[in-house]
Length: 109
Image (cartoon, rainbow, N blue to C red; front, side):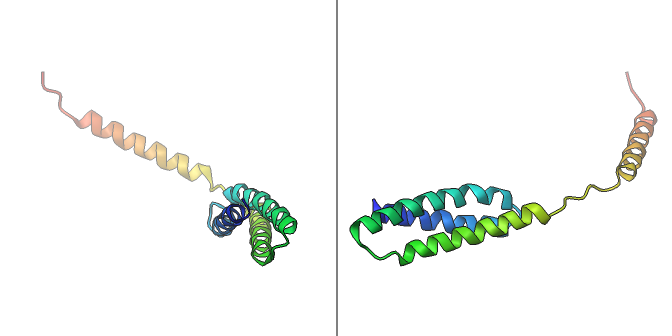
């Protein structure tokens, strides 16, 4: 159970760091929480069996890095919406052109 928890913790921690760096940073919270949970399980098992905890510290370090980076990006990233008037004018122009093309078509019965 200890080794399984360590392996799953490492996998989720690395996945969380990768997602925190990518534009999908909001999805990084899920594997980070899972890595933290598996890290706690592995830590408790290691303390119970008196085994070294160096790899578990790496799990916690990667988890903290990913949570910090994802939180920073969530707080300070501003999504800007462009001017919708220009988009509306372009859409109206395209609709007018489409109507003109339809009017120019010759219908044969």
